[in-house]
Length: 426
RNA sequence: GUGGGUGUAGCUCAGUUGGUUAGAGCGUCGGACUGUGGCUCCGAAGGUCGCGGGUUCGAGUCCCGUUACCCACCCCA
Image 1 (cartoon, rainbow, N blue to C red):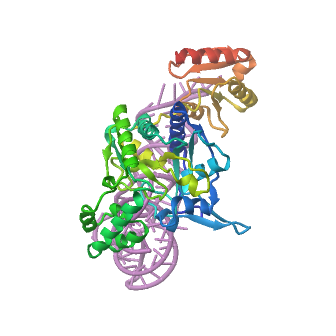
Image 2 (image 1 turned 90 degrees about the vertical axis):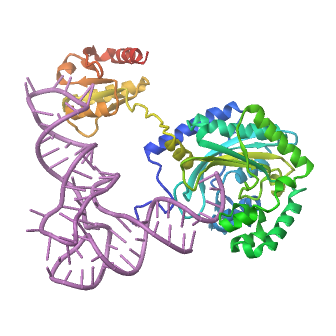
Image 3 (image 1 turned 90 degrees about the horizontal axis):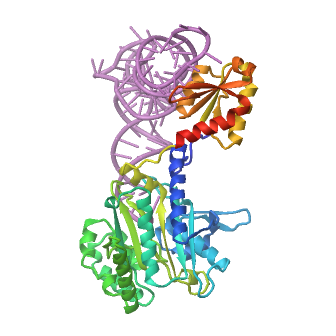
């Protein structure tokens, strides 16, 4: 049998899982302060949730989805991102009645069938927020500020990141611009790559993303959506930027910033980190005012962001951020010989029941080896149980730093250990 | 889907122009006076050299194929 995790997946081993849980706690604490509540949606959805939401023509939908038929021939898809599911759930459960608002956050694994490389896995982990029912530009600035603050809280210096913002327009101004851009691409068809020419039909805005030098040169002359925004979109964008200025959030306008999901309208943004190579977008998002309508629901504005765990962790490493390992045991209970095995076992359990992190040996190790183990677990105290002590109904408590030892009555063990630990923590 | 790189003990890696029983560091386990840790010293366990062919008297070392991983393109978080 193949004892290797599938291509593009990795086991989150303790050293990494600890960082994930740390980031999760950071997010939970921070997001709660901004009024967000947790939501857990299924890891798979009806395929239409993504094809309609993200868009048939996008790369994610057209070539990266894990789609399969279940035993009743329903087409299901492992979620490639979180927003579509949250909006679907909000509609299904009417979380945003007319005039109301909802702030939700999620965390979990996402799936995209891509060629793996640094910072890009087929199963990867994201944390994200969705702010539904709010159309005012102030919420745009708030959401962007929250994303910025998250990376700061994760320990990534703002000097190592840059925030890019842009506006994608809306249904009033984007269609006309889209046609204008398609016409521009057609007019320069000979100078653009095949991919860009294909984009003229499907998604002309993506041509701005092309890294081909010739395409870039041509596209530098292309009309910008920023200059074609309708009055409402222009005003909204201006207010978002003003809000960021008010908050002292530093950003760069990037008229070529185009997100690869069709549902975005108006505000889009992305945070890039230094030192990650090609996959440097550690977080991004935008507004999606038409998405719930796309699912047949009422017109409901919304926006959100998603941040990638693996990439955030790479950015943390690049910045030298470490998440401290918590002591695995406060007290180690050592066994001198097998005659005291049951005493050791029950003492260890009693300590744990008293709320103290305690550990003991289950591998018949020598006493010396048990001490090494205690040391490795960063135990502050070691309780030594031997025939001598046992005969007197006592144990020896050794302070691992001062090497002081004291005989303690077994009945008195918990309060004594408790007192010693409290003294240490003071 | 397209390129490039790499696969040797649990981990990180050496392995000289192909030559006899494949090494180191870390880790693990044991020991260094009787029931005691972090340093030091000694010892032990642990490897189908990714896999399959080929060349050769002889291949971890050369050639071909294959597979896995990594990096980049693409795309995105």
